Image (cartoon, rainbow, N blue to C red; front, side, top):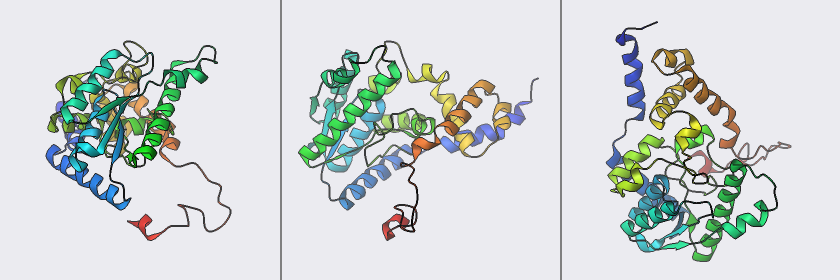
Length: 286
């Protein structure tokens, strides 16, 4: 059944409005967010894992704008299955930002355990790699007197498309409230290398694998469906806009099924002083 275009326009505009940002203002805000957050923690430098992808590139660039290149420590942490092109792109980003990039190969670290497991599934291997990289970032932070800064965007967080206590672990994250398509806008505003901005996002474990192939839909559609869903537009109304039912249902299921990943561990309350529940300090209310 065909619907007149007038049926679509109001909510289509809403999706665009929900995702619309003024990139220069966002950059200014995120830079100031980093300055204030790091100052409040009395931390003078940052540690960033550069994967060669756009998210980590944007995070590193924001840190450079906030602190200067000399106080941004970047690390590439390839695994034996990682693409050589990803490492090249990480160096390209580092060179464009004027930061030093050290390489820590995690192959021996990962295979020390993964090599003992028969038929290791790619998802499990990816989680192991992510947590190994996080261990390195925290240890380098201890060595350098800095703090790890996260690179996960809002789309990944809402879809649970990350490793719990892995790439979500850094205590400061400037990108966590930006949808993936908004991260691309910020990347262009920051003048990051086009090769990095334009390439398809990937976990970089399987040749040819991309985020969008895992999702079964593009980030363009995923972000619009997700934004409408988060704005409490009904599932049926979103379908009426012309989005495929299977895509809408996939987004709704992912958001519902990964809700637990967006929270701290569930603690059993046994008295009236449970941390973050009834025991709150003034800073928690800000």
